[in-house]
Length: 193
Image (cartoon, rainbow, N blue to C red; front, top):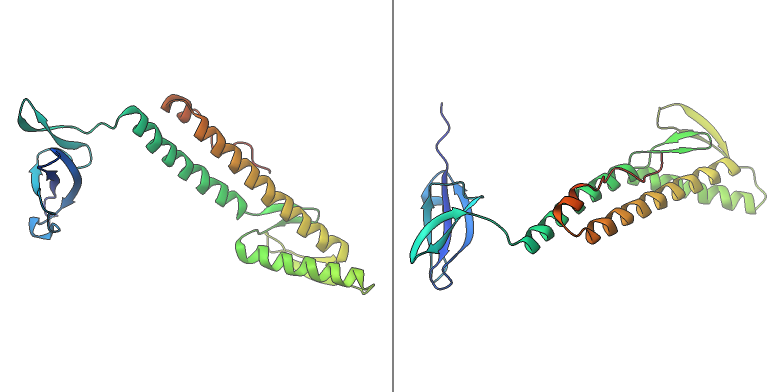
């Protein structure tokens, strides 16, 4: 069965003479109520790239174009969303420790912190400590107190390095003078192995 045709609408503000909202619906009856001094207007163009404007006193469909400063801000928001997603993926994607690679998702970070603290307590009390740790590759490696503390430090340093790399990307994004500079920023560089 064929999909129903989508209808493109913009919300026209008759007082401001601008498009204040765009939407795509299958049935015009599903449009939300229009606010005072506004009306929904069907348009031929894509509701995401077309708006209405007064041209020589006539309400006319025109390509939607953001002012350069606004377009740069929008591009910055999109670039930071990409950088943030990449940073978060790196922080939770595992890291190398002295005895092998470990998981670093939030639950693993919590478990590593707890085990490293337990190892530190045992070491300071002069007690033996040993724990069998399941590594990222599902192998099981026995860690004594020193090895568990080293794992905790390795994960902490890795997470800190990821945070610093993400912060550096944020600073690059904010400092970009135009969209070309912004597009040249590689959000995947500067991270630890």
